[in-house]
Image (tube, rainbow, N blue to C red; front, side, top):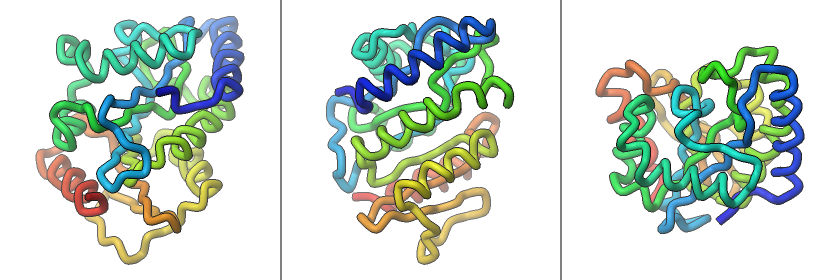
Amino acid sequence: MSPISLKAWNGLVKAGRAATANGWAADGVFSGAVGPEYRPGDLSSILCVGQSLGPAGPHVRINYHQLTSAENSLSWMLKRERSHPGSRAFWKLADRLDRSRHSLAWTNVCKIEPTSAETPMDGEWRQVASACCAALAEELVSLRPQVALFVTGSKFKNDILGVLSGLGYGPAEKVQTPDGFMCLGHSAGRFAILTRHPTRAASEYFDQAELICHSLGH
């Protein structure tokens, strides 16, 4: 399943090629992954959203072909990441939601990967933000997750809130969340949770994130 349109993908490719020509990005564009048992719009559907590939970038094998990039991301999510533990904090949290990961979908806000294998700097992000946010909006619309869990911290926060606001998400005042978690709701009964990245998080963080996601779904 390809969660974004060819038009949005071509926008990412254009931004990615420009970033590569500017000397800071690797060749290729990241595509989100959709587990084989993920059901858009289902009450149990969860989309896990990270910042960017970071240290895992060279291993996920991003490229400019949409379906191939999506297949590589799915392979990473289901199999290959387990043998490359550099991003374990993110996947440790995903495993709390579904150990098999088959019912999850996964994406990153930034879909252009810096050659530094780090989250892009602010100036770099601004060069590709429009294309990345357009793709993120399409992912949220096509995947219709009951819970979109953004473990992105302050990085990209304003852009994420802009995307969510444009899709009709607003403060979910009736949902109680612990410190460090922000909940937004949609009129269709779906939710978005914004919180920190799980790197170096205490065990209670994982418990809280799991409880929130499961209490808003199923």
